[in-house]
Image 1 (cartoon, helix red, strand yellow):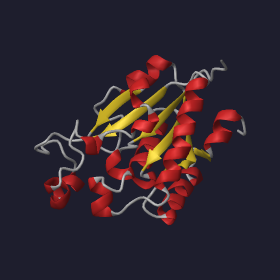
Image 2 (cartoon, one colour):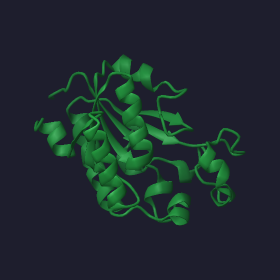
Image 3 (cartoon, helix red, strand yellow):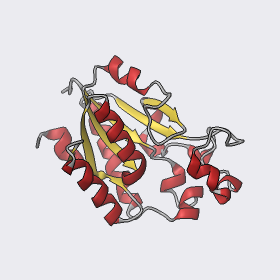
Length: 198
């Protein structure tokens, strides 16, 4: 097995609520374009990363049933709360099973930034990570928040452009473009990131 020492894969919020048409957030705010293809590519990414000895860490966004720990957006979104969006432990908040999350580390969070008040940084240090490959949703929200947070903690960050998505292609493209232009991250497709086009 070929290992990629010092690298870790962070899969951000690849949850049913965002990626399944029956998910609460998808129903209320609209489905992600190309979500089936995104999931298929991310499934291949996770499998190949594991086969190369790379730690895979998942983030899972969720709230208490009473939403007492909810962020400002969720506190303002009465329809999402009424429909039980992202309640921790619910099927709606579950990570897509195709990604085999039980074979990795899951970091539960209730804010966009998965480093905030979680064990993510300790886990990355334990794994010896200095470079972080980031996939997931939404590009311009939680993915971007985690790129910025990782950069602030001195990780070399690669955004996997073909394994991230936003509600529109323009939002996706503009988010990645801003991160790259600001030199907060490099953008690559997943295959090149794993197999060598640096």
